[in-house]
Length: 322
Ligand SMILES: NC(=O)c1ccc[n+]([C@@H]2O[C@H](COP(=O)([O-])OP(=O)(O)OC[C@H]3O[C@@H](n4cnc5c(N)ncnc54)[C@H](O)[C@@H]3O)[C@@H](O)[C@H]2O)c1
Image (cartoon, rainbow, N blue to C red; front, side, top):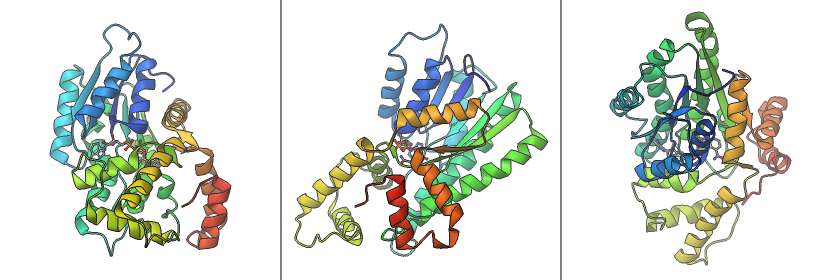
């Protein structure tokens, strides 16, 4: 797909981060956008930002509250898109919504593990199934599935278990790679891409916590403070003497740094993704860190989960650890 003007794009998780940046850049190119998210408020802000510059006459930006891990909600989202965009076809599907969490298969609850897996993988699966008939009816289509560097390297470093997210992101990558051939054989006017971002500056950590706990507050509960204390301690820090308030401050600072000191911004990431779609690349690494990790894991797969490998990798990727 060489340009997006006049096309219709569906974006999951359009409320913040890369989803919001994709929506803004697509609208700027004259593309109609239908987005879903669990937060109506966040989507209203995305819509406001999209409408900040004058839009081509008739361009539609629609917002839909839907949880991508719930198939009934996804089917309702699809029907609302068809109705409100007044269409029976779409051109672009960005399966972008995702959360972190459920890191340990052993120590975390089954509920948390499955919530993360069902959003990160189930969301991609349900939305692709639901929107495929609308993509099939379009003259050209493109499915863009967001995996992660955790789709080929199942770790955040040696002190942190990361199972639900990694399992889901490997599934997204495997599914999308297998779709390349399936689409060529059965729906050749539809292309697909797997997106593998490195560290992108977004509020994913804070948003994931909200989705997992159902809380809208940024203040950690007692149980969360204890988990954060353990997690920071696993990274080597001595936190025994810190008060709960100091742990909260450390948490807030991590969230701030993750968003504001990342090597790649959400806007830069969205540009790389959209350029990749235009160039019809099925494999889109986002960020120099993602390229670096890809090369290192390929060069020495057996070492990928050793501490020494992580230290070399974090240095090469420019990650600030701790
Ligand atoms: N930020 C990074 O460093 C990074 C790295 C690799 C991959 N990713 C992936 O990129 C994608 C976008 O993440 P982001 O960093 O922009 O995070 P983000 O938190 O800013 O955006 C994700 C959006 O998805 C929404 N969402 C969460 N659960 C949902 C659900 N069940 N149904 C519908 N919407 C839901 C959130 O409310 C949020 O608006 C995710 O799939 C994430 O796993 C992010």
